[in-house]
Amino acid sequence: MKIPARLLPLVEDGMVDEVISQLMSGKEASVYVVSSGGRICCAKVYKEIDQRSFKQAVAYREGRKVKDSRRARAMAKGSKYGRDEQEKVWQNAEVDALYALSEAGVRVPQPYGCFDGVLLMELVTDDKGSVAPRLNDVTLSHEQALRDHAQIITDVTRMLCAGIVHGDLSEFNVLVDHLGPVIIDLPQAVDASANNNAKWMLERDVNNMTNYYGQYAPELIGTQYAKEMWALYEAGDLTPNTELTGIFVDDGGDADVDGLMAEINAVMEEARLRKERRLQAESGEE
Image 1 (spheres, one colour):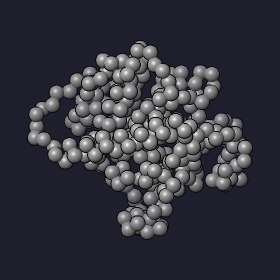
Image 2 (image 1 turned 90 degrees about the vertical axis):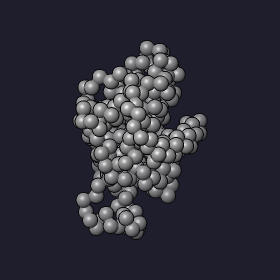
Image 3 (image 1 turned 90 degrees about the horizontal axis):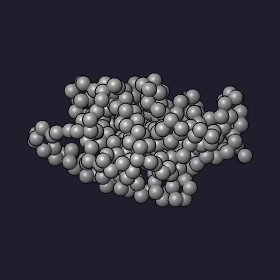
Image 4 (image 1 turned 30 degrees about the vertical axis):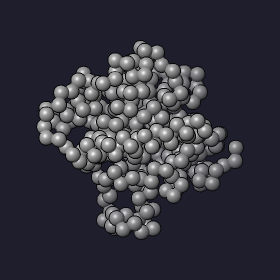
């Protein structure tokens, strides 16, 4: 196929041998199947900020550290240089998260590096070597739903232990290979300890997955894995091997009005995002 302009520098520098096909195109990025160093992998080309629907919401950027004080000031002022630097931070967030989570034992695509706004990473395939489908496109048995939900809970636990919350986890951001679910799309990942929105984002992530798998395994509906997980995390008792029960008893403390409003806003935003994802899926986009 014709080499896209954003991939041409990587081809010229020898990092990409061949662009084989376009895998998908969405409002955040376009993904291509490429050959690099003798292996078939993905090239995720991030779109410019004015072309994206996500727009790097402030809630996701909170807590992201920038060591260079000049860069930090420029980003805060919103200058052109600052916006360019913010783009780099946003793109690097996914790369950093993939490396950290891969090391933590979370099932994510193996990253190979990010070059000029292009992320090279593992191509996730099924047992026949074809591109793995999204969870949204898979019909599950009761047994598989229970097994894969347990794997997701384990991976989200490992993510939290690594200090990371996905922030946008749903059936549209999970692939299914022959071993089970693989979590993808992490540019909006947040720092669990530095972002004040991390708790409700974690709850939204876990509840999204529980509700989806609950279509096939109704006994999952009503479980409280996120609340249980976060309580253990705050207490310093959560480990990658913690066996969760899905049961959580509220201690009856004072109502958190700000937290409640944040959750309401999160539900409204999630409804909007889910509608957008559904329309994208129906149109064949990412």
